[in-house]
Length: 360
Length: 147
Image 1 (tube, chains in turn red, brown):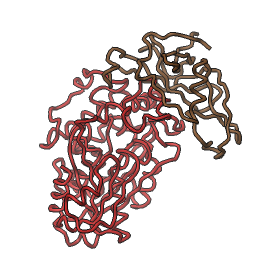
Image 2 (spheres, chains in turn orange, cyan):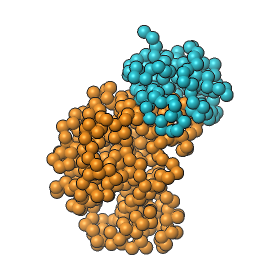
Image 3 (cartoon, one colour):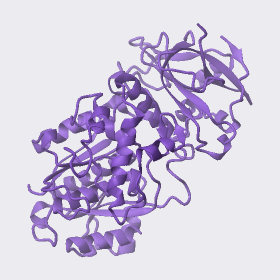
Image 4 (cartoon, helix red, strand yellow):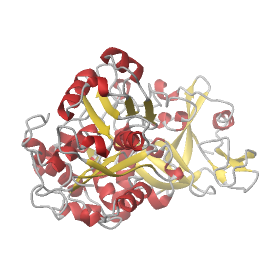
């Protein structure tokens, strides 16, 4: 599956797999040693993996951009492949490396699944800012409406507000439709230098800014729950957001479309705040006013349906959707989209983001 | 500190601990129903879960101090779905994030003592109680402090 994605991505770009000389990955994916051997790649010049979990998805592409800009490698692949037959990521952290002396301060409480952990942040957000379940519902409903139109989406049945409120609660305040899908899939993305991109088959999409990281106090985040009060009920993205906008020299209001990592629907609301599309604590009313809807919203979000409704490939489908939006070939195309934001996380450090543009 | 045998008991898989050199004193104190945390020898700040270094002054010296075992609900979740099969008969249950008194900013994650599903709110005063879960393991739980 991973090899197929790489072959298709190279073909799409007008490159040969033999041109690939780098891998810039993030956690839980395949070992480049096996990929290089299997695909017969002549020489690897760059092989690096961002630490963290889903928080690194956008950052993997940033890592690739670093390698190509520095001239370390020419054609760098960022990849996510996911087969969940053996172990479902959403079920429990207990079989992972987290089950150590540190996780002893978590697991006896019965809080084992990431969804339970994220529920704590969502509950605090509701308490601090008055965010309501109707706001979470709007994220789920708006994203499903986008997935319905997309033939590759896994969930294409329309979702109504009644459907949302009829769904079983899994861990308050989150119900089934606040949780992302768990699916198998592979996505490969190829990054080359801007000069090289100009000669390739597709109109290039430019990495205008990339950043990963976050405040040290964010740390393991909701796996430890010791984040400072200032940003406990947040996505942990604020430092990354600031660096992205500075690097690209643009404002939040310049962004045409945002593909925001959505393992849980409140994460979208928290990122809208942390990226400055609305004030801190105002994410609920912001989505309630219809801003993230496509078409018609001031900032269409997760136009592919996201992890909630399209597919869960740990954030890489968000990169694909942003590229399609900027090429002008998206299923749910935002008119004249020229700037897209893509994020990875919130999860443990690092969270990450990209600002992509149709022009340099 | 209050000693209770909670109902339902902590499921055995949740009472499997992996103490190491840094965390063992916490779990040893737990068996005698005492809530302790690290206090930095350099700046006197208190911390939990245990770590090797103080994240304020970077001192690696600390002592263990006993806390009153009371606190405030910072957040919580009522888990109604069994995310792992062995919790099927245990749901629903409430997990509480307790901001501990006399340890500013330090939070303890504990399951609430039944019956408090749907009855706990952020800001409630809670007391840490102890569940002797067998095999010499004692785990903290949170009980709403009666007014």
